[in-house]
Image 1: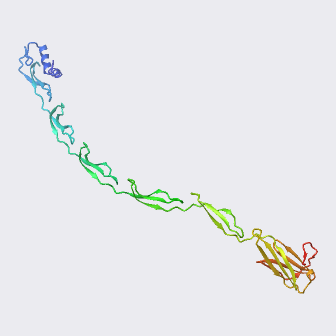
Image 2 (image 1 turned 180 degrees about the vertical axis):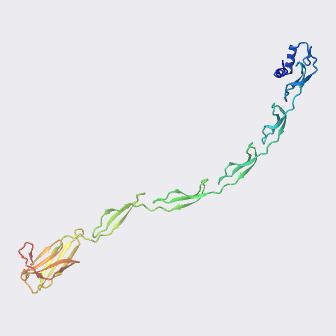
Image 3 (image 1 turned 90 degrees about the vertical axis):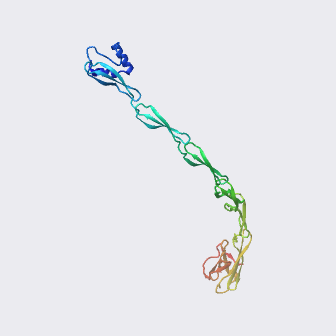
Length: 341
C-alpha cells in the first residue's frame, strides 16, 4: 500500500482510540504506539500528521517508515488555542446588567464571560393627566425603556377660554339670554339679556273697508306668535254720487239761470252745481226756451226757438260753465227736449 493512501485512510479515522484499535487488529501483539517490521530496519522515517488538531480536540501524528510505509509510532498533537472575540450575549438594560462572552469563532465555545454595565435611564416627561381650567394635571418623568418614574410634577390649571353663546333665543314675545361660557369646562362667567325681536308681521287684511265719510279697519298678525294689531283706514273722501237732478231753471232777462244737485249713494251727502248762461241777445218769453239734460254727466243744452240759438253747460268744480249762444236749428218737437216752465 502506498504511503499517501495509508495517511489518507488514517485521517478518516474518528480519533486516536479508533486508530489504536485498528493497529491492534492488523498487527496483534505490537503496541499501538510502536510498530516494527521484520524485514525492514526502518532507518529512514518521517513524522506525518494524520489528524489535525482543533481548539476542542487533540490531533494525531505518526512516525512512518519511508521505505516500507510501516507506522512505527503515533503521538497526540495538543489542541489549538481558541481564537475568538467578545460578543454581547445579553443586552444591558437600565435595570439589569448584560453579559459579554468571549466566544471561539471556530467551535463557538464560550471561553469566558463578564458582566456588561447597566444602561442609564432615558427619561422623558409624560403627561398622565391633562390639566383643565378647573383642575390641575400631572406629569411623570418616566424612563422610556423600563417605565420607572423618577419624579412627578403638577401641571397648572389652564385659563378659561370664554365665548359668548346664546343659551336662550330671544323671540318677539320674550327676551333671550347670552352666556359668556368657557368652551373647555362649561363654566359661565357672566350673562347678558338679549332684546326681544321684532314681530314678523304678515300682510294687511281689510276687515272693514273705508267709506267716503267713515274710516275703515285693517289687521295683520305676527307669523311667529300670532299676535295681531289693527290700524284705521282714513275715510276716502270720495263720494259715490248718483245722477244729477235739475233743481231749478229760470229765465233771468236775456240769460238763463240753472242749478242741479246729486246725492252720494253711500253717505247721502249732496253736491250742487249752478251757473248762468250768456245773453241770448234779447229777452224772450219763458215758453220760448227748451232744455235737454244728461243726468249722468250733468250736461245741459238750452235752446231758444225764437232766435234758434242754444247754449251748452257742463259741470266743472261745482260750477256749470255755459258756452256762448250759437245757431241751432234743432226741433223742440224731439222727445228729449223739455220746456222751461
